[in-house]
Length: 319
Image: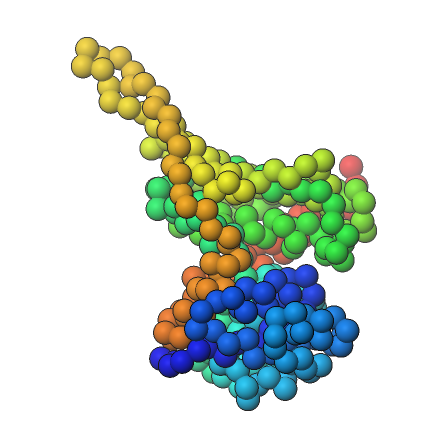
């Protein structure tokens, strides 16, 4: 167990990395030791803004930190994260865990062989509404998820499955305890050379079904998950983090059907990324396993790749 402030480094000073640096600079019992980026102008600007040092090579942080977060392009996840994991330094790696399954397996393997903490940045797991949904939902039968947003050019180098849908794949896998047995999917390229809108159907061994839709070419943002079980309906708006409930009430004493009772579960809204990074710091300090381990991130990536393969098959199949 660490004593004193946890010394943190941020590798990658782009959009997400700069937010990591901001959050760490404000967390109590955390010392932001440095920011690394291959672009000295970007990296130095972030370091100056949050009162820390800048290095052009993240490996310069190895002997100066207790842990790092890695927010570099996905194609560089393996190279960057493994240098720290091999040195026994805990890593919070942004999602997806890697670009390929082989890279992801290598990252997880090195973390496990070195007994090193590895957390994957599926930040929606730290949405207060999602956390409460896990408490309320028992044995879901049908799950429907929509994650729709406007086009953002900074994410145009990857497909919508890797960029957005993987969040909801991870959530569905965490809500359904049964084994995934079948995946079907369709998608379309609208703006970029990659798939920009996708729908996947996930079927599980206990009969549960999840229908997941992701789009980055919608007119407005819409993010919602609806769940149906024998106990009733739970619907979460990811943005306001509140849960709508519809459940059967008490049966009338004179017989007949139970009335449907509606309610709203109100939770205290918490910025998911703030909660995620605070959780990482707590795990580093206490030596506890994170909520989203490397193995969890690898599982989500495997399913995301299945979805992508089904979509590619549908795009190139001959009718």
